[in-house]
Length: 398
View 1 (cartoon, helix red, strand yellow):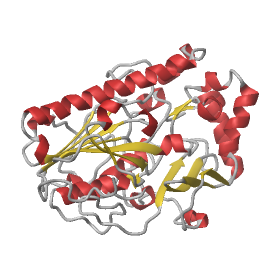
View 2: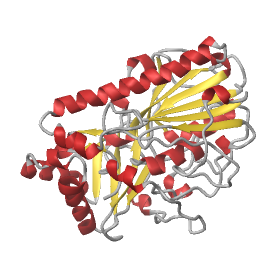
View 3: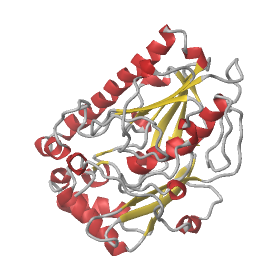
View 4: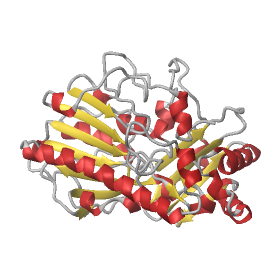
């Protein structure tokens, strides 16, 4: 299938719903979801929730919106969630917080006040659900769960079971999505709602020397995510064969609602077939509390055939970050330490080189252009307080 444009029998829909199933790899998408609509392989804008979710909502690359960590914030409410429509963000995921758009002029990942349920929304609506998905600890989607460190420590000798638990978590997330989908169908709202099922990034499941979770290193398993469009009278069980970007979500949804698409959005508007030459890029900047030189920062460029990762910053800092996190700090460190020589060799093969190639990237974008722009945060945006204990239990901070 070559084109998503004008597949609906109507020019626009009133409602849109985005379901973000956290940490879901493209190759782990349940058939029960792909059969509901048009499925594409997409490149996530980052390997880290803190950067990817703002990119999904704004249609901008991380270096454009400049949200790199959980304490950073956007300077403006995304157009997708503007008050022109009844907008809600329901986030009840790995740290148990729920939040929605409110009257504040800024949007942060963890610091909004209240919660609007799906049933409370006025029509037309824009609704975003960020679900626990396949996030660690795997299969633990409740508000109270075992810390990731305990989960991996207790199961370090049963890596097959860990992967089974990951699939169970993804399946549970798919069931929760299908429940919302059925509610739309049973109320007669599905044909007037464009529904998107996707993820903010993928997940490592023991590859590259026993690494699990996400953020680093930048590899295909962390960037390739599913992007499924359904409802809106779209056909079912269809594969879209062009590689997409998660940045395409926001402009497509705005266009489907017959709302203007800002020129500041870098994604494609798939609803009306807008195309232009563009790199499919991803960036991550994982800062460390041990100093700015000890960090993991990378940029990458992708096409249907593969990609190239360009590591940024000093090699020594990357080495210290990789060894410190993977052998001692990360929740999955006990698994890496089981076979330290073999695992460290595999791990460093994707952490240390300046450039790492995957597949056969054939694009005409120079890899060296990925050094631009320099990473930076919004100097005018105040940083927000985050629940450090919850983030620590998930392995996000030391």
